[in-house]
Amino acid sequence: MNKRRGAAAQDVMWSLLQAAGAVESRIEGALAEVGLSGAKLVALTQLVEAGEPVSLGELAAQCACVRSNITQLVDRLESEKLVKRVDDAQDRRSLRAAITPLGRERQAAGARRVEAVRRQLAAALKGLDGGALARLAGSDPVSKK
Image 1 (cartoon, rainbow, N blue to C red):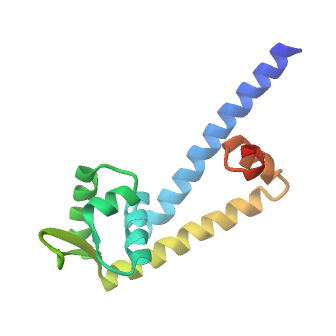
Image 2: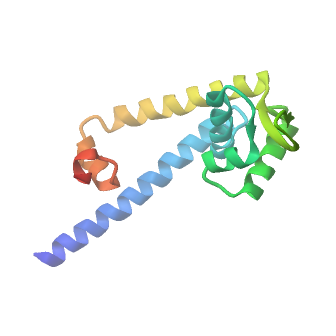
């Protein structure tokens, strides 16, 4: 009986990993339709939410990546006219990333695409126990007590 449970748990684990990959692919595909990637959307969203230019160090921390990666990402966003680098008024040696009007438009379009995928996923999983999935992922507050 224990071997059966172990095999079933392993099957569930692989199924969840496949499902996560499928969801990620759907999100990336939806974002590609508006010329974005997940990383670009995260950075643009951070800039929109900040409401003001953000230092590259702060942006790296908010996006949970190292400074060299955020520099490359901002380079790509800047080449696409989605962000621009501006001087830091308090430190002349530093630059900040500022979102452009096109960047705001693209971020909003990307957010709408991700929300559409979320709604489709929610509809497909309607009968599933969301609490069990949240506990499995470790994000359910009940499981943290």
